[in-house]
Length: 421
Image (cartoon, rainbow, N blue to C red; front, top):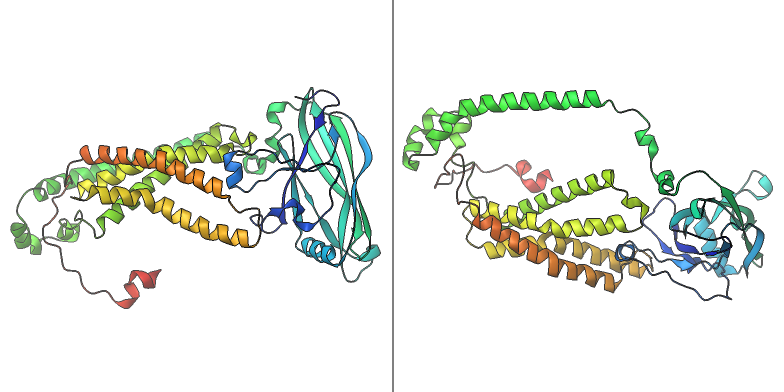
């Protein structure tokens, strides 16, 4: 809440090309002027904001609650060869910048390519030197912010650029709880959802699947009973009389190669599935988008908690197939996804640091993530593996696996997995 005349801080965050939102740089990387009478003040950010590369700095733009500003000078600069080169490249790549006012984001363009004096011909880079803020308020709250850039000036050596801004306050009846609704994509929800048709289709699919399952279970029940007992030698004798899936019933549940890796992949897959389900559910039900960085924090917490599911499913799968080295499987599950992700992040982070991008993650943030993995994810995965290992019976399958592995014909070169990939 703000009282009339109270200072409202305008934060600048980052800039980057419009057609590549992931390529971001600090706001002052273009050498655009700022108010030298004030020291740059940084806003303390949360953990997930550090991971996303946000770095909010005071823009030195003086805005007071419900007090209009007709036109006020911010700073000035004289263009030289270096600044013209940087600004021209930024305009040609359609650079945008991001600001925050009361945690509401607003975006603007650095400049535009235009023909001089509105005549047809070669386009020239122009930079906007005036920013017009239109801020809507309700009671003591800021509800909506709009930014309009104007006063385009051509980039020529020796030109003096005078950057100015204006502020206009407008009253609105929109409530504070709905101020983030304008950032949502309502075009996706503009059509009515026919819930009865959706429910009818779902029930029809469930009904048909149930009928098919009952028929299959009734037909295959006797075969399951027959193949769950008996000796492998007897099975080999009657193999010639069998057809279809019955020929390979003893091989279906045989232990796969690289059982530790396979079990770890199964556990990681379950973890990601549960994580995705909860992320979608919380996104639909909750309103975390109103707090910057809260959704990332939620994902991090959910990932740490679902480590138990990864350990349980991986350990259960490994024990069911007769695995003996459960500690190796648990260690592989603990480092499989985090290790792969960390390797990719380190490589991308080195590239970001080399190009001085703001997307680079700080060392403190990386150490914090590693600490969360070491002290939360690993213990939960260990507990889940113990539960899965101790609550699962070995070789608990509908059909008894064969002790003899069936010889497979040699694959042609075009059926090899590497060729298919």
